[in-house]
Image (cartoon, rainbow, N blue to C red):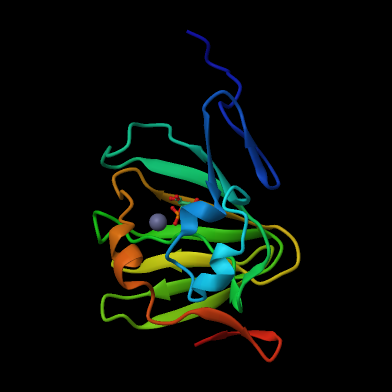
Length: 183
Ligand code: M6P
Ligand code: ZN
């Protein structure tokens, strides 16, 4: 058995590479129903990329005790007055926590607890965000360039998109008077 090997995945700033990297692209069309301004949404090209996620799943989804690692590159822009954002989710195993961290660009991390209280934290290169269990999370790009961030989460957390799709967050991140505000 080889005792010295190469790593299976390489992180170079905002990109994960290696044979074990899983890639996912979400288009603007995949974000249907999430934005407040329906008319502005329909004027967008649904095939345009909203964000790309590169993930490393070293163990099978659902494995207790393992970790997953991902990099997301979120495009800038507004739909109406609302910043382009990720779908957002909570975890199927609701008590599972997660780390996000800023790599490139600027944005806002949105949190919503079980009582539907919503708050936000600024994301910038080097910012670290701890997402408690029982807390829905999503990211909005408030800058003019790509926002790249990292994530690390338990392999048995799972993604619950239904709650967000149905009820949304209790507040939206809007550009008001030229600056991001929760409204
Ligand atoms: C991060 C992690 C992933 C998540 C991705 C995109 O990389 O939280 O689990 O899938 O962001 O976010 P979403 O699933 O909300 O579209
Ligand atoms: Zn998560």
